[in-house]
Length: 216
Image 1 (cartoon, rainbow, N blue to C red):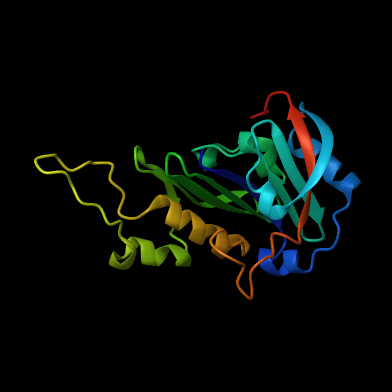
Image 2: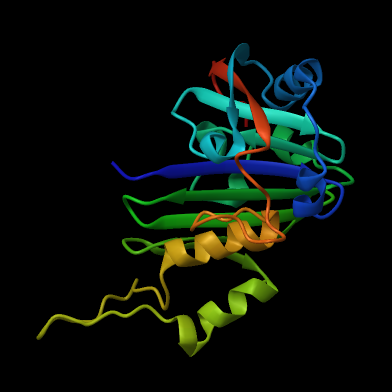
């Protein structure tokens, strides 16, 4: 079946440090945040989950938490293949803050991430093997460098007598996605968290059923 991750983070500082200091999230403040970010949708509370589980929200469910200095939302309907088209209310809510978007879909090999600073998009990258580069906006971030260099190139062997795919990627999209999540949010998907990473088993998110259209 594979997996699909969906994550939005609004932050006033370095995400790993803020999440390592995070205590129990205020449920009332989280509900207010969700209603502000998704106007017109009905938000109904459900059971809480660990961050490690909330990163993989089933379609129609959402997981969120509001901590001092950092707010988290996990919702498939808010993370699309073109991060630059993130709904206006979600971008507007990042005024004065940094906004990070991250998504991956293992079945199609898709990954995407984007960063806004004070409401201005500074980097967006979305790619998958079938479609190639869906979106590539802004200057590359430092953690991307090894992937654009030769040492992270995808090990692809072309079929005999078959033309080279013009959409072929120079590296594995999911590998870059895993690195992006670690670099931007301090979350490790592969193996146990490192010494400076966020422990996804400790951070708790509130659960919601979100009904209604996403306002663009």
